[in-house]
Image 1: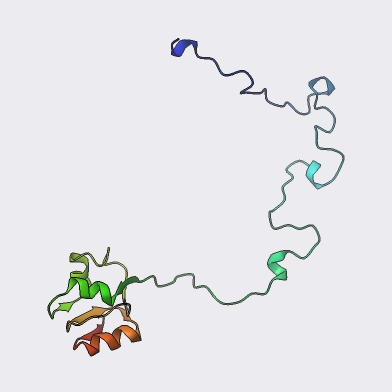
Image 2: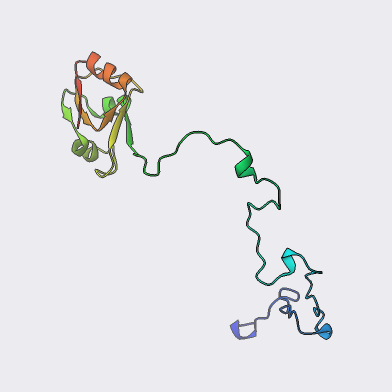
Length: 147
């Protein structure tokens, strides 16, 4: 056996259905679409939200809240991550965070969250900081600078 003698398995393909070519072709007259109605027309499509004349579900359900079209997506850093990387008092900003592997890019803002404990007095520069993180950093003798 070689590539020149390969054959498709029996029954793996079918002939294309040729509709509208008369009764001899098996799909004459209405071409398998039944009689009249929306789905029998040429170019007939129905949108997935269409429910006939019934009030559609997206109009029946109440609307709540607001989702911004341009949300600010922060890179999250926890206090425990800073404590693991900084063993001595230092000033740490986004550039230093990128160097030591805490963040991936300088193009997105950084937010400090208060998960974990820290005992080293570090000055942390970030675009945002939670209240719990600020309390923990200041209790350790450090401070937070919003840039």
